[in-house]
Amino acid sequence: MTESDFLNDYDPAAFPSVAVAVDVVMMAVVEQALRVLLIKRAEHPARGRWALPGSLLQPDEDLDRCAARAAAGKAQVDRAVLRQFRAFSAPDRDPRLRVVSIGYLGLVTPDVLLRAADGEHRMAAELRRTGESFYVRGEGGGRLTLAFDHLDIISAAVAQLRRDLDRTTDAFGLLPTEFTLRDLQRVHEVIRGESVNKPAFRKRMLDSGRLEPTGRKDTGGPFRPAELYRLRKGAQ
Amino acid sequence: MTESDFLNDYDPAAFPSVAVAVDVVMMAVVEQALRVLLIKRAEHPARGRWALPGSLLQPDEDLDRCAARAAAGKAQVDRAVLRQFRAFSAPDRDPRLRVVSIGYLGLVTPDVLLRAADGEHRMAAELRRTGESFYVRGEGGGRLTLAFDHLDIISAAVAQLRRDLDRTTDAFGLLPTEFTLRDLQRVHEVIRGESVNKPAFRKRMLDSGRLEPTGRKDTGGPFRPAELYRLRKGAQ
DNA sequence: TGAATAGTGTCTTTCAGACAATATTCT
DNA sequence: AGAATATTGTCTGAAAGACACTATTCA
Image 1 (tube, rainbow over the protein chains, first blue to last red):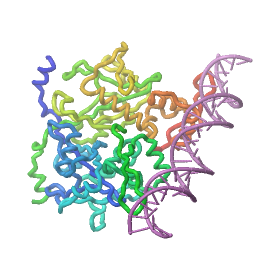
Image 2 (image 1 turned 45 degrees about the vertical axis):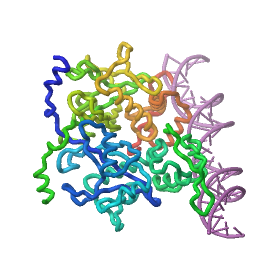
Image 3 (image 1 turned 30 degrees about the vertical axis):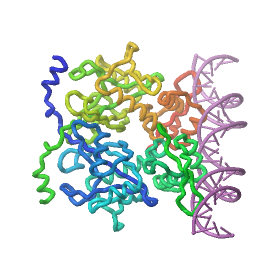
Image 4 (image 1 turned 120 degrees about the vertical axis):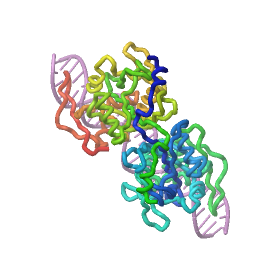
């Protein structure tokens, strides 16, 4: 039997049926705190609960493309840095049917997140740390109970972002194209959850080869303007 | 409509059908080189090609359990360190049907790998580096063409192992329970692909808090015996 | 001039690499 | 004693933290 004969005879229904989804943890640093985009579920299951934007993997797309589609569609965000970080697979994590979900980090600037969160069933909820774990703070200030295992997914996303803060350029997705070293430091401080030594941080960043001066300055406030930098093309 | 009514009415067939699999990159350091367990495919598709041991996700198990089952079953390995590292999802990566595969690192000692590779349709193939990419060296010395995208999976696995060498204790899976600092250094050197400064390496490892002296010594050769250490419980 | 922040200089500590010396075991 | 490897010590340079100083802009 040749391979093509075999494939013609093949019955896909013999495989256990599983759905594959992408869930995007769309984050931004807003006023010294990490926030994450949540959408209130309009349908069962978990109707009325806050959940991550996500999408089912379609036959003709790979996971990266599915994540981009979820970001542009449900999340209403274009131009996010998207990165796969882990699969979530507890057999009962979705009551409908077996769903294996691939978690994606989505990094955006505060204005993009706040615009995407504008609406009655959408919010940019604040992420709070308590020791090693996290919770999501609703608008009134109380802890939100999220749908499915989405709080686990968010926790894993933040842990991943923190672990890779110095090894990848992901965190630059949280900043606009041009930014000052102070902006960059603030982002690092929020992600690491502690303050950072300024001269050492500046030297380390400038020596990393990732930054490129634009020549422009940030003339925003009543004080000395800071140099604007951008992420160097091809930097990793 | 209540949530349970909704679930009773729900039709799982409405979801796109995808199979989820786990592929395990089972590795060991054998004679100063990384080797990976390959199994010759007995069936179409890709019959006769060398492939990674893997398994389809079953309804009642999560991915970690599926990886453990693949390791114990197809790979014939018990007691491996198993760790998820990335999902592979190109739509045409399997000609049968849509398969999203979750890659797992499997770290074992050389004796375990060689025992698992004992058989006509099994081998422990050497991984070779050429610049940034990798290839798999067969027994005659030539490059093997692997089934599906399994060479990509292996490359990603080695890259991941290297990236996380100092941040996780994964690499200790490549060593027996008790080992000398020299053994540990050799493993690091093979993974990093370059030699390591001995005093600095020793100090760094001993200061890491991951090691625990056993009090025993390795009286193997015609020279001064080395202290034996073990991985401290709970070390990360 | 004062407020506020940007950016730099210096000192100190920590850590890793280079190199070499000492220690221990077996033949 | 000699071979072989384990283990430690010392020097040096790089990097980061602490702290304080200078620089620049606007009100």
